[in-house]
Image (cartoon, rainbow, N blue to C red; front, side, top):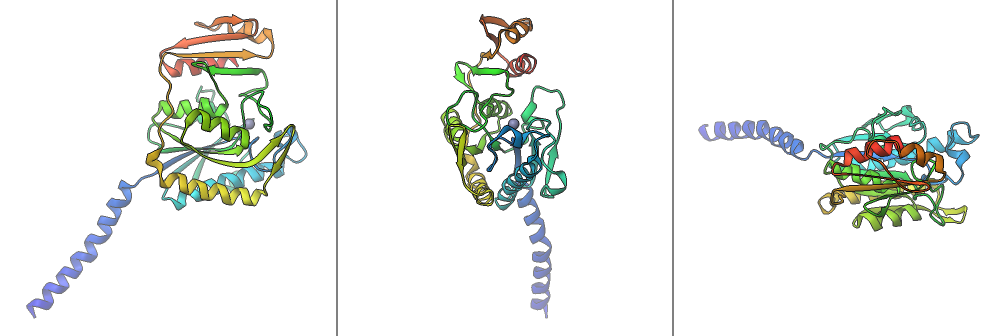
Length: 295
Ligand code: ZN
């Protein structure tokens, strides 16, 4: 009799303690993922009309952008993500279709005016950053819709390194101690990002051929993005936040002289050539403020 009572008490204790242990293990394993989504690098996209609000086929391509976003979210969830924040980073920042967004993620739309720009919402609480639909820097051969931030910039360097948007945004993530673990887009942005960041998982969804491109089907691209996201997050500890040594020197070269003249009047800016202006500061955020007002 006594023995059976003690067995029952042990069983009750076991049943009571197990969920408590599981709950505390789950909270220890919190995994917060930030996803910045651009549009030019989405599989299928080849022309500016397709990523412009008044383009005839824009509705189709914003749906494909939403599907690639969801593929990344599914991959993140498969590897145990507990919180996912999506930043719509293209044009109006109102492209991803909110009603089709995976219900486990939250979405930031439109521009706040802050220098965080395509990384609005990032902070030190995140564990990993993903770039989806990204494109190469301005003037890259065999790249699809290559540009840097706007059509007015010819080139941007930070500490003499040529920067695509992925590089600038990786620096912002690095400022908060968060590594970029995956970039999806065309072959050109994948190789530029690998060159800058070193260890980063890339998902090449298309290959530029001059102004044309060879590409996989959008559904194959989504499958690959989901798979690679899960793989990247499963080895999250391998990736390092991208940092450069201060002071940070940014040089912006414009396509026309007038914009360089305007930017040269920003406090602290220095004209370095007919179309170029530079700015140096020990704080990355000050450089980002310059960049926000210069471009
Ligand atoms: Zn874009």
